[in-house]
Image 1 (cartoon, rainbow, N blue to C red):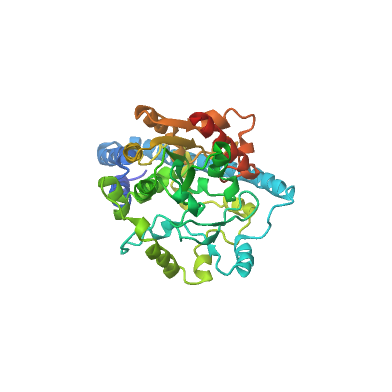
Image 2: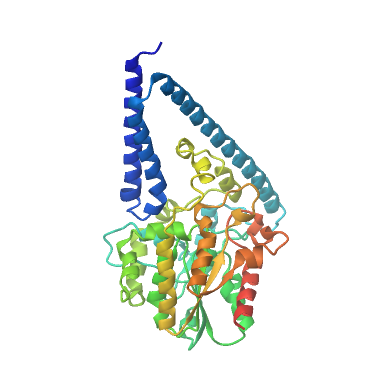
Length: 456
């Protein structure tokens, strides 16, 4: 027979753990996430407060009932971890199949560059000593003591990029403001398309980009500008708009929204004081077009040697197949938190700043129209939607909300998920090697055709 003291200690332990859980949720919501995700954490507040209530109630429950409740809780916890383990190994099996498929695709492609990133960079660097390894301006986002926050790269510079999604390592030269354009485009009297996006707009060679495909269709002398950098979300992209749109006479602004990470990146950007000013002050600008020399020097100061680039590059010595193999590694921290199980149960809704996003889209439209351009939106889906057995990313769960926001704001848009990928017999034909990453050259050509048809 278990004595009364044991059950009192059990109640004490439950109450203590419940309070710890509540404090952890409070820390995550208000300190770690700066209160940006309070709506998401509301359900966890309710759960933790319920645990505290039942822990207090346990002091007044009879011992036989406590025994039954304890057995049930132990069974429930074990059951949850069994489900988490099943989901984890199921995903590992799916990744294995994807890895084999990618390896065969690469083997069948005679033009695939088999060098790892750093090896290819060093080879090309010997041919062109001035070649620069691409770094996103986001490397400066956590440096709080900067006088200015760059949103572009180094100007008039030959860049090497690690995005080998089309089988080759692209090289390109930046324009006067550090973007991937022919510099003379800035001098055109009229800009037909002012394109804004993240890394989706960067992979591959310039000639195969959406902008260049559009140019071949337009057959006029008007300009097309592409302002894009990797790892950017909607607030950084709004900074593009405010800093550089007033420099030209643009007819159309087109924002490319990549669903899997744009809201995730936005969450980080909202914490940056300088970026937040773009959102909170309608007249705020850093006048970056006048400070390109300073921006260039900031990069050269941060990355003084080749090794500085090497150690700041993700997967610089990993092949594409090895990178997929890495996805099989079990994250035990996530496992203990029942990450996958929560994703399909209580976390069906995304924990992303969708309300802030809506506000920024309003500002996009307003600022574009103020500068004489019409604002358009292109929704770009992630490949996980079309890979069997792969869950979509957290941010992608806002698909319907984003489309609803566009319709409420009366913004014209192209939904590539419904208008392109779902209409294809096999959506994977629009992705390089039918594997993880961005779209391929066929997709860029097709998207350019869709944009052209919409406007002409």
